Picture 1 (cartoon, rainbow, N blue to C red):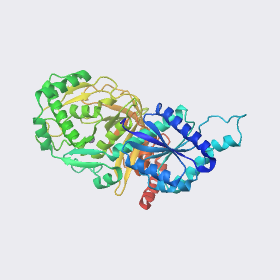
Picture 2: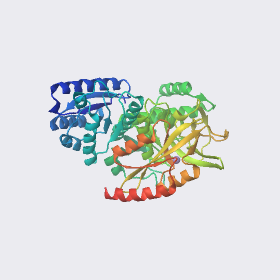
Picture 3: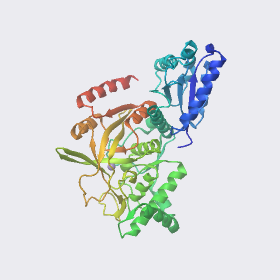
Picture 4: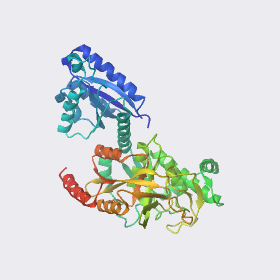
Length: 488
Ligand code: MN
């Protein structure tokens, strides 16, 4: 992701004379350089814009340049905003207005009219903000002193969400087999998703995968086994089952890399010619930041890859997840999340174990190898993208993951346990009312605010279930949003 950068575009005008403009340009360059050392991506000072032409030119260049993941604007002085209209109206990249100021304090002795004319961001940023509001620009507004950690963290978080936009627009998903028969929520309009989010979602034959698997050499499998044994504890004697998963992983990865795909889906209903559902194979691919969705769920597959990209350099993880079962004892109300096999080891609290167990669902001739572990504790979110027919809705719920309160020694899969906000039953009522799926991306790394930013930039509906959400307020919100989105 390090190839991405952001452009710093500073507004001004000719009114103040060349000396002020030189000062503004020098300070803007200094700020971009210092901020680049603190932010997850480089901030490149581009221009002190004084004319309509300069703004239009820099926007055209930003639109065209794949390395530019967004623009950050600021007005050191006053910058009349009619000259921003043509440029902003053609902007196709994420846009953040950083309402800051070069100096932190008002200097009591030094301040005079010259100082005020140079340092009038409070004035200039309001004019700039108006035109973006007037143009209904989807943008992020961040106010704060540029050297303060809080402002820098917020700008960095927004940058990561904007990189999520760039990743989304180039997302390719490889589907092996169709969606699980009769399931509604994993369906969706692939043409709409490509138009809105940029995703290219296409299918490849399971037979082609089997052909690729048959071409994998013993030496390639040996190398993959060395990676597995270095990363995980082997807790099975069935080495052949692990080798089979290695073969599956190598073949899937080769096919995805050949097509430039960053996510894939498959289904237990279509494993024709395969001995095992990919378990360890899918899990280890997710550990390498590929997205995955079970039962043909290509939406959650792409979202998993996007959240992983957004969370790069973070301290946690993002994983394909499924709400499986509840613990409804008063005072100890938890959701237990897992999947048939495919839980990403990036959420593991300890070192995962490779185990083999019988799997009755699907057409497994042999017991598939999978990673078994407990998820880590911590604040997190679950994210679901659903197709409402005519538009996409992104639902985010705040959760708190805990160390599972019981060992569950006979559960043969990885597990994560959490408390949903505002509490289990109200949280479930809200989630179901909003139409959230059973599949989600669970992330310890990406925040709800970042997902809100991403949804705004992608121009899709956003619903956030928090500690303060009530079913009554949510029902009203969904009703009004339904009307609003029909008018859009
Ligand atoms: Mn599932």
